[in-house]
Length: 174
View 1 (tube, rainbow, N blue to C red):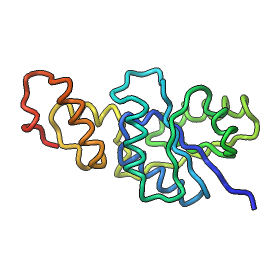
View 2: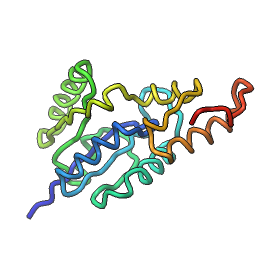
View 3: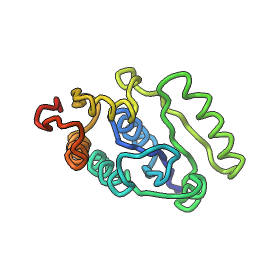
View 4: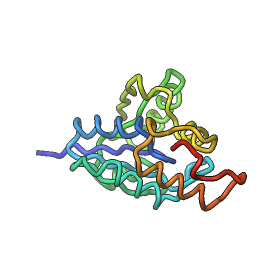
């Protein structure tokens, strides 16, 4: 019997509960899920690929059929190399659909054997984005309902390293 393998690609900078929800639900559908951290997205990053992989491995450690790895290049090339038949994407809001649809068609043009499935986010995570998490954190807001503890700790470490604005780190509501 052929294993059903899927790749869930993204920048995950940082991983949040919306990402984790999509990964957990996809892990129930597929025999093997590869969470693929894109090393060089066209957006400014807070965390290195190694740090993002570490975050995801910790956050998803309870899922036995999930592996996490970094990659460069085309997502379809990664999918082909690992024997995946499907790419998993998450949809939060209607505006995500247009971009995901265009990306799915492009990926099929590049490799006709690949399909894309989009899982709708649960309503409690529809507002979440990695950039929102970082913005709330930097403003001293409570992100405990948005990210797992490993992410909060890594954000705090980054903040302490950068030592911005003269604020006492201990005053942040983490």
